[in-house]
Length: 118
Image 1 (cartoon, rainbow, N blue to C red):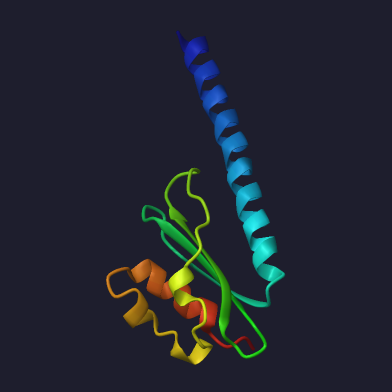
Image 2: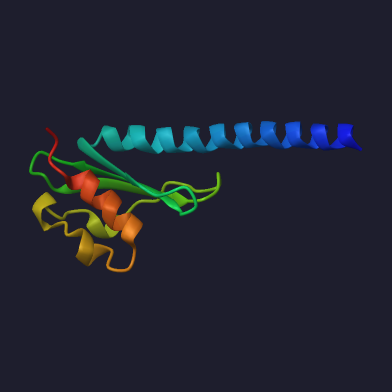
């Protein structure tokens, strides 16, 4: 019985590693495409038991959003999604409290993505 539990735990751990790699590969591909579009700002939010949020925005030479991705979730099945409603907006017009009024994690991630870099 103990041997079966150990085998099950090892198989679950290996599956977690494999699916985690799969998720990272999809995110990296989406992020690479975003980086080719312009200057990228990235924000991350989330806690230990809350859905984590990664938000990245690509800005063109006029500081308008030309590309975006949002990845949120607790599991390895979270996939990057575009935020097309932000495309074309100027960096100064991005107000996290207006864009995400009900989602604190997305507000935090957006605030970090548009913050001036030092």
